[in-house]
Image (tube, rainbow, N blue to C red; front, side):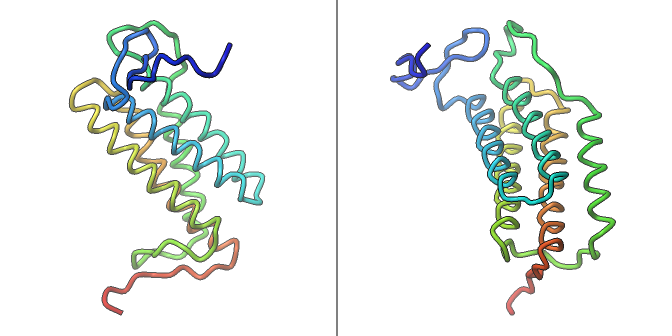
Length: 182
């Protein structure tokens, strides 16, 4: 099978289930942003030296593929049986956040992203995650989006923020805190 089909050359694509929609459709934007997030997390995973963090990020990427597949389905046609996102997936992120926060100093100021490429990659992934969340919320205004998906993505952005802080600590990078007007 060839990678190109030529069926999208005029700006349309198919959802799982066969429904054709414009590539500008909110559903396409939502799962496309999840795909972009997944690629950014792959880049981050390629940069971390910790096998443990790499394995966590791989698990996150797996969950993002599930979310992307769910979002790519026509909600009117349940044509494909997919794995799902569960409360356990959200709890997993929360437990990792709690573990990392136990090793970090209390946060008293906003942090200016940067200091090391891997820390910056974590913050880039976090901002793409927030954009994915906004896309999903916008989609939910006109089409059902399971709340657990929104919960997972919201928690993932928190995880990526704390991971950026944890990576900075492990790399001995001073966090740059924001002090307005200074």
